[in-house]
Image (cartoon, rainbow, N blue to C red; front, side):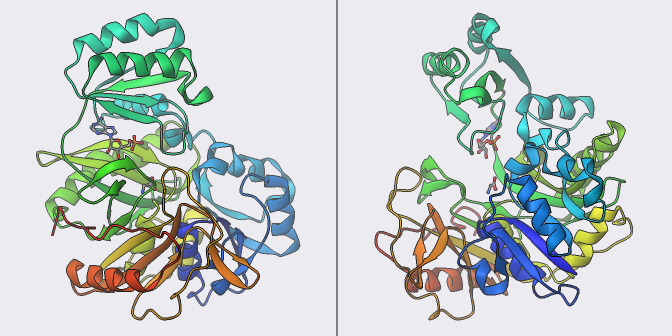
Length: 425
Ligand code: AMP
Ligand code: GLY
């Protein structure tokens, strides 16, 4: 079958890399893709939010399966768009409906959902501009650190954590009264701070109660070594996560995954796609920090290396509601990914530098996150540029490969963390 992946990051390169290995895949397209996806698929110059053009392209090219990578088109209703038009009836789409995507698109919605279904998460209250004074009063009742979250999508920047009460109050005012994150902060969730180690768990669910759990992962969000400095989209990831033993994963399944999957059905939220559980281990008990309605990036660049099953079979079963009874097989080997970024990221950075060394590395997969081809050369166009992924018998071995290859792939001002895994190894 012909398959279309939507997106242009490392996650989409990893999807395309895995899908291209399937015998079920005839032609593979990525819209808009990057220099890496062009090696395993055909890039199509259509933006992720241009639903009409995506739909027309899919019909013209006899696409059977569409896999939506990023959250934005999902939150904007790409799945509903296809569903609403008879001419797309033959398309199988992996991704939740717009309402289902509110699990990521609205923090308030996701908190209410968790409370309705008794899913362990931090206590919270939601405030609007009209209730700013109540918000300030509420902050005074809490013990620091204070956690403030813009309700809507804010490109990963909408969460502010501070020890200082005055700063928390000012931030709340900025978010609500001065639209610090635009519309996204017209509502703000203030929640209890949870102290623990984070991990990411991913399932594919088919909207009928069937689901499979992919390998779990841990990502490293801060720009600096030792988890210091500004938050980023993710500077590296590991899978498996050593503290996520069988007993802990069983708790996650019973207390979090099943009630979420069943809650979606109970509430008639059409959801055929990935659920990403952003979790935290608080004294041995898993709690949900957030839901995302897509795979993680860069977690996907590690996780895909461990999946042995045919991903196309699982994606099709997801889209047609036949995941129940399906198994997912993954290797016991460990996977790592180390993200090479543009100097200056996550703040401003220069683009257009030629990347060297991509063909010189061995025993790793350099997934492209932010690249394009200019005058026949591969250059950086994003903050996160190359995710250097590897498998090894142990996390240490995998990481040694990623770190070694990271030295070889270079361009002006490229930067990466050399300490991925420092906290758990
Ligand atoms: P989110 O976008 O909700 O995942 O939040 C971004 C990051 O902020 C998370 O990955 C956590 O590191 C941190 N965070 C969010 N909520 C909490 C919380 N309630 N307690 C502690 N840390 C949090
Ligand atoms: N790596 C975290 C995310 O994809 O949101």
